[in-house]
Length: 193
Length: 193
DNA sequence: GCAAATTAATGATTTATTCAAG
DNA sequence: CTTGAATAAATCATTAATTTGC
View 1 (cartoon, rainbow over the protein chains, first blue to last red):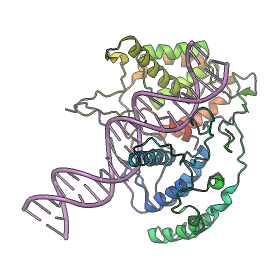
View 2: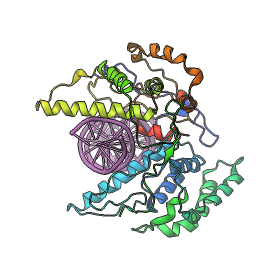
View 3: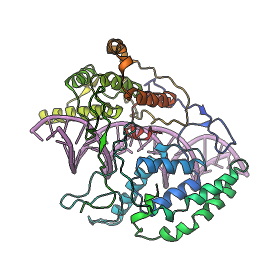
View 4: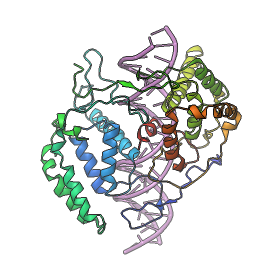
């Protein structure tokens, strides 16, 4: 009977300031806010599948404004979302249909072999590569706007709505691109990171 | 066409000070020295299967004395070695031989429910509660000895340590929300924060 | 209306598979 | 051929929805 003894989830409290309000929230697991999910989803729709370390960092930073978040959450989110989208697709079509739908920019198609192995090795300590991302598509993503907006709110409101609106506004241009489109515009959107 | 755009493995050169000597070594992949392998193997033989973050850190530090190494290398090594040993076993005996040989202290017995789930990847930002890990498996291994030895060399130590320390520091706060720790590859990637 | 019980979603880990460097 | 590195699949575990009985 689960005697294991080991306390599995020593879930304690942590200063989980979700915007400066309530403290002492459970450390259980990340519980994304709607804004966070929205942004992540948008990025996914835009074609981002396996964010690099830098990307994860930036995303995490952005999202941290909307609520508590860690880098790992972003990483996991993409892992899961990607996997489950694929799963969903598979379920729909029993046939082993090769949906090349991934639209993963960071994935190199290998001719002979099927795609495998992808994201850059994110090294923590050593910066092996200095591969500059040439693509500067980021311009498409008005993150700067968000940043700007955020500045306005830094002190005051942790009002969810306000933030959401700001966010929405900021991303309005973006939403036109990836909204419901089945095929994201690949290239360059993600390189903003 | 692997041209996909973003270069996946931007492997360049890095100041791979292998003890302070040669710089500009390829960052290709970790090439363990015999001492390193020996120590790892010994640890494995001693029953260490899934080292915790702290363990990895210590091991990494130790091994860094014998040559360049990163935490992730240690992590991967155990992953691979564990997997391949199992594979080997399976191949030998078709029967599903109980590989209880693990002697993995950090693994909770699966009673009713299998409780795996181990370490929460660490993040620098949030510190979950501090549930100290009860397992002190490391005691089994004479790391202290090596550590002592290394102490003599600390002075001349490479900058690698600095980084490692930063890393360590970052992780120190990461406590175990869960009883056990394991530690996902990701944390390595994300820990750069 | 509400809270315990149940189910559905999904966050977090582990394991298996694969690629490629040496 | 060996094995480090990395991802994707499978799995576990927890939280939110929801159902249900009162």
